[in-house]
Length: 204
Image (cartoon, rainbow, N blue to C red):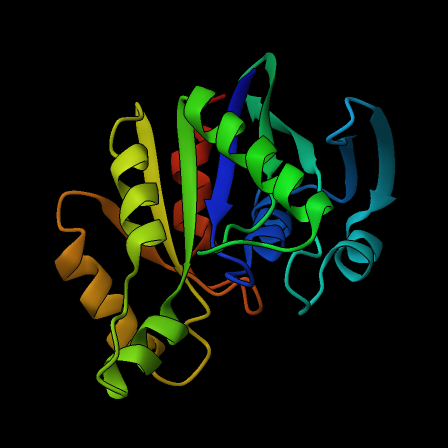
């Protein structure tokens, strides 16, 4: 079993990306473990369509615990699995909500100890920033990239390519992160996740 920690800024689409990856790997019934910041754990199981409605939200910090999705991967006669660890979105500056601050700390600890990282970036937001001549990347983004590059497995998902300005964002990310693998994805439409699946499948 291998663990893949999914990281990114708030509203980058991390949870949706996790669920879309599970779909790409052929999962119909989702089993996941919620690890709260107080140390408590809870095992849950839902059909993936219901999980998509229940777990995803457009609100910032809707994920406030580590959520580990156990995904079986068929490799010949051997039964293997990959644990996809969905995490709390990270944000610059001081966060007023104590519960969210604890969750972000939990995310950073998981990131530091991880060997495999999927870094979800909102490519449409990057493109919009470029269009407005604003900084497309900030200190937090740079820090996540720097940590990701130290890992044995680091993949950048340039997400939300179904939205305007995303194509420009993807091009910028590929130029800026030329030494990292950048895959253009849409958690909404599923675009790019067959390629993500091939990389993750190798970790099982």
